Figure 1 (cartoon, rainbow, N blue to C red):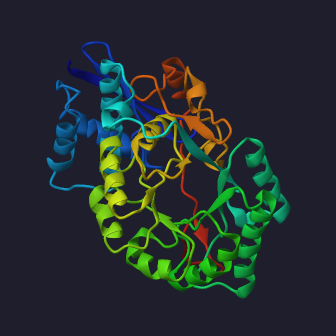
Figure 2 (figure 1 turned 45 degrees about the vertical axis):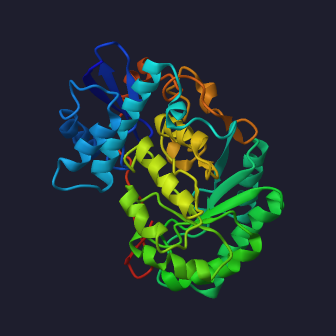
Length: 386
């Protein structure tokens, strides 16, 4: 079998899909995307694809090595995300050619179901306690046993006691609503600085969140051991790390309880399986980052199925980013990604386990998207991390 070509599809709400074709008629799908940079990522896919054109799609390890190492400049979100999309599509082809789901080629499943979590609140600082409680009840009503929320808006180096107390109150509202038997996690989104992170972690401890995500920016990952020593809350990070070499720098020093590689950013399925195995050696759990589309989620489920240290899976349905699109809207088999009672079954269909509705995808390309990052400024006019 030989790779014969590819097509890219930029579709709402903010996704980029890749279709790879072969001379035997088997097609594979991937999701190469950097949020707010779809055209840049698409250009990187086009510039890379000549290196795999005409080659055997089954030689995935070799293709990724060539795609990554043949350029003098390596790694980073754009290059690694472009490679990730190609890699996902090659695994999809390989699984379909062999008639098995991808996880069967990675050692086989170690679980029957995959725990999912929902999203509440969007930018929580804009919402009232009543809004938060209503959103939490809605997620529970949909069968989820876990959810994640933001608790802070634009943040400076430090915050007032009133702001700190407001963060604690938002978290307390969720805990009171869902009770002690369900879980909620908190995303700092890298908005918080060193000293303030310690203060917030302390006031959040009584609510016992499942984890706190991106307590500080990845640029300050050397602080994770210090922050972990200051709290009993498990710390999570990794959505802005792009390879096992990046994760080596955070796993070695310690501090993280959970890593969150994104299979559309960190070189794809096989690289993230390697990252998960590295984490397992440090007794660290994996909870893949996935605020993107159905191909990214389908790839994540293949990984989740075969990793002993898997914790929980993010998904983007109901997320505020998804205006203008739904997670299952581009699928012919939407049930495969429809969460029931807070879980998804381990995929059993060949390849990624999903069937893309190409007619809908092609039609959606007529509605271009220009997702842009939020720009926040503090009262003095200076930029605040989003």
